Image (cartoon, rainbow, N blue to C red; front, top):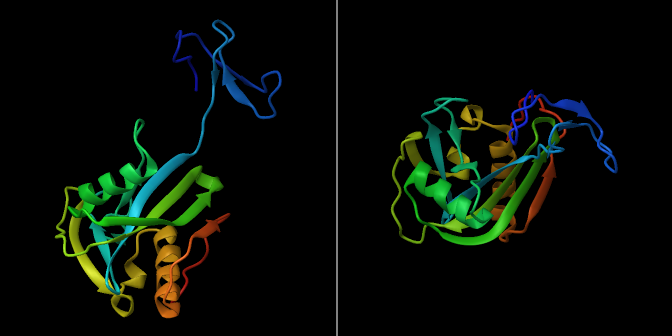
Amino acid sequence: MNFCSNCGEATIRRVPEGDNRPRDLCEQCGMIHYQNPKIIAGCVVLDQTKVLLCKRAIEPRYGLWTLPAGFMENGETVAQAALRETWEEARATPDLDQLYVVTSIPRISQVYMLYLAYLNGSQYDSGPESLETRLFSINEIPWDELAFHTVRDTLIQVKQDLEKGSFSLHCIDREETPTSARV
């Protein structure tokens, strides 16, 4: 950050008194500019044993498959963000269940929070950010065409939980990008 968003003066980068990390500071007005991780909220939408995926119509990863998810907005809860993103990308209004996967990616300062949700007869379609939406059985998932490692990690958890017949919360810390994994 070069300039203070409060007063417009130039900022400097240093550790403020009582802190332990370098921050952008404005010496003119005293504002400390904190930068915090971004939250990505979404849903793992199931219809019995099938999962709803969206083919991306935007960059990054145009044309690859993902779960309906996106950046949380100010003024909404994580659950509201997950349902909004599911509507925007898949035109679905599923019944929200439990928080299912939390993935921390410190390298890019992002936290993914995905809820388990059920279609329960509701419809789905492609929203403006999706080329196509489709229900896949676990054996039909296009593993080599998934947009993000977080999607792959989540779908591996879905596969394992479907096999054991119960779903639980999964917390994943992704320190680095792995090489391509096969399922």
